[in-house]
Image (tube, rainbow, N blue to C red; front, side):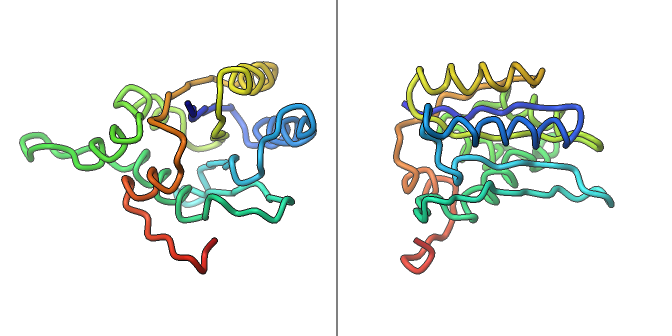
Length: 165
């Protein structure tokens, strides 16, 4: 079972420190660099996404996964009376509910940063949450469906090719 952990911070500096703390714990909790992404609100109102550097040389997750996921999470909801929300359906297919999404949307705003972390298994989740709480992160956890990132990418609509591996 995998989890998506979102930790909201009141400033980007604290989020970068939390990300560095997770990187220093690599020997204790194997957390590949591509399992971390930092979302900030850039000047001009644009969302900026930064993946951690993966020094292992393995790239199981491609940047398109994080870009697609963040775009879906932060997409505006449907207008009233327009029917279902296909974005919510895609996110629900991998285990992310409307509550998680709405809290994340509230969290990502000017002068803040959100660290997103993918973890597998409760022990690793608890360790990561403990580190992030030490930095006073506002923690949310979504239990994802399964552990297959290729399946998640397909359900979210990312286009991944063998060249991207």
